[in-house]
Amino acid sequence: MKSNADIKHTFLRTSMNKQVTITVPATSANLGPGFDCLGLALALYNRVTFTAVSTPTLTIEVTGLDVEKVPTDESNLIYQTANCLFERLGKRPSGLHIQQENNIPVGSGLGSSSTAVLAGLLGANALMDGTFTRSDLLALATAEEGHPDNVAPALLGGLVLGVMDGAEVHIEPLPIAPQQVVIVTPDFQLLTKDARAALPTQISRQDAIFNASRLPLLIRALQTADYDKLAMAMQDRLHQPYRLPLIPGMADAFAAATAAGAAGVALSGAGPSLIAFAPDHHTEIAAAVTAVFQQNNLASRSWILPIETSGTQINKLASQGTI
Image (cartoon, rainbow, N blue to C red; front, side, top):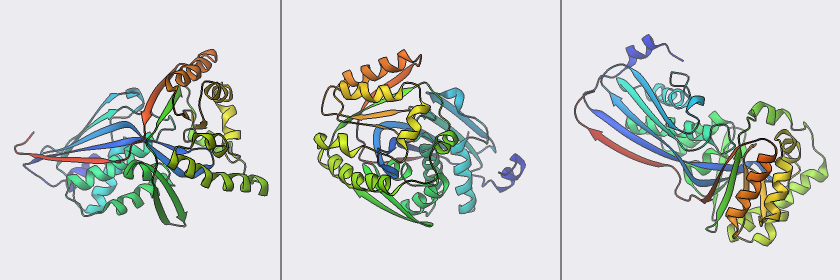
């Protein structure tokens, strides 16, 4: 990361205050057997507005959820990602104001870091009239995140399968029937390093076959909203059995969601959020899961969300004058 002094020397002076707003949806990755390769975009959004200003300053304003968890200096992930793209482009605004509206909880298993990475890349590219394509930016975002299961659906919308072959990434958008899901996020911090450390270093042939057989069934069930198949299709032996015990009450929350009418239940990402699929009774499912977390002394937030099919949106404006 460059110092403020270094950054000022590379600013391009401008008399026009360009403004770009990037709207990025939440995502739920893994979805049971789809470990590190399957993700779904949800209609819950973070919005980030970048304003190029004439004075060589950086200001960051954060509103919405978990404001206290988001830095407002150069360590801010959106700024860091945008700064990396400015360096690739070889140009940057004279100064920058970032307004970050958070509606996705931080560290929730709903892709908050992916929204930051995508917002930074797309915002910087649009603000400076960059020539990077969406495919280019998706590759950069995947490299930053380590796998495409959150960034790909957040960028493209809908249900997306991401396959990595070394540094190569193959993205397969999959059609999906309109439906609503229940998200419940307990107030519990599950660090990514702890969620990863809980996983075994080796798996049996039986467990590999178990997951490999369920992933295509899950994709088919989601595409057709076949709720009768979801209970079996969302079974997993690669990550959920090892991560559920890390979250107080999560195993009981799975059972409560199923009893209240959920056809399929999974950890969202690595957790601690739960995602439940059902044709109806969404309010009852959310209430049942919330009650379990309350019994474990955890407050929670819940949403009933449709699937987001449009992906990340860019709204670019330009206004004359200086700030």
